[in-house]
Length: 165
Image (cartoon, rainbow, N blue to C red; front, side, top):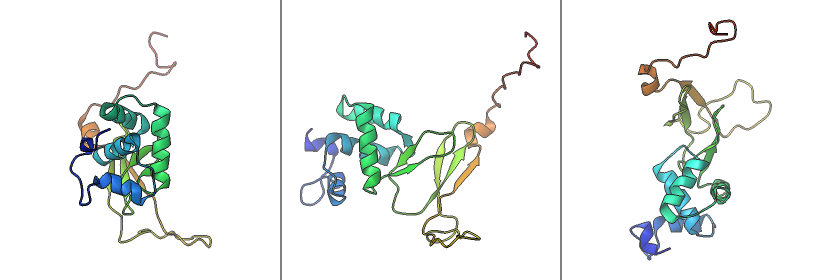
């Protein structure tokens, strides 16, 4: 892997993503750099999407290696893992704030939503059972603009409704 592959260098000769990985005390590898860079350009990507982007960038890499890298980046706080109901885990590099997500019920498109009110946790539970709450994770659900204007998917007929049954 040539250093030029990662674009312009920061002062001191290292690429900014290399410096971020080093600050997080993560060993710098081509797979980690490619996965992190992929998430910067493709927020809310699943592991399979990240694996495809990494392969396009550096060549052959196993899906398991990408899962391991995503786990390492998440543990280091460089990446956030979100799990909307009914969706595989998604990863994003926006970790510097406490934001929420809006998810389309039909196509599962996911977008960021700034914090509902002020600083973290930005929502206060009516009863916290003695917990000190420091973060709130909210998922808003609805239909994205594209799905809102598209015809609804045709429901599969039940056995009782099937005229051919």
